[in-house]
Image (tube, rainbow, N blue to C red; front, side):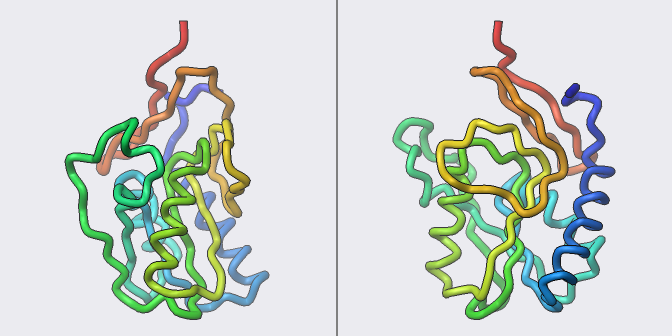
Length: 170
């Protein structure tokens, strides 16, 4: 799959349709959407608007919850997490841009549970690039690809959104 040719806006529209179907099948009427900084927040903003959700959009900065920050360093632009309504007994849609090892999602789940105990959490990701190290699977995936060791996908934005392959293996 040619990452550079993927249209994130079209992928997000497809994700919104899949989320509508999933929410209806699970009879979830009033979910709270939470995007993970930064790319996940960009995707969540668009999904939130397309789904017409009434609750304000929440955002998480999982920098302090990462299990690898001693290796990768602290994000110099740590932002506060913002959950505008209680997540206690709420259905949450957690949104991220790229799903790889699962460690970002694990960190996000740890932070969410610091705010309360949701009734359920659905995971929506723009791209699943494989390479899982933890047993984490998205409920809604916009696109799937497999990359070689050393390759990564980056979402650029917020306007326009664009995907690119970086660190191409030799």
